[in-house]
Length: 83
Image (cartoon, rainbow, N blue to C red; front, side, top):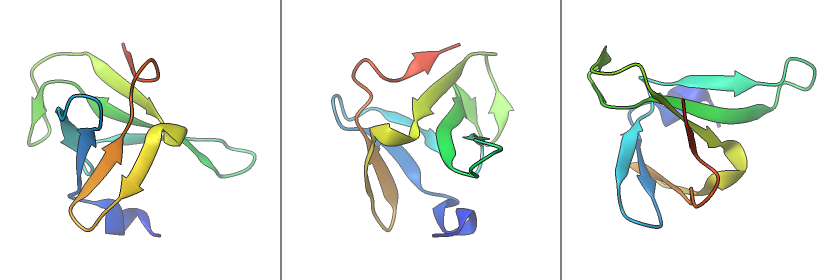
């Protein structure tokens, strides 16, 4: 799957149904040696790329449970970190 195919997908938390953000306004943490994606970093409280706060939500790649046509379901229980 290409990153461009993820663009625009909403990220939803499986545990509480909360909308965490949208791919496209995110950063990826990539292992420089292997090229593997380690995490998705979402700006918390942003809308259309305009940040309302400086906090970010770090979601480990292994927290992703399902990638669908419109959304990505993640299970963040004890995995997501806010910085």
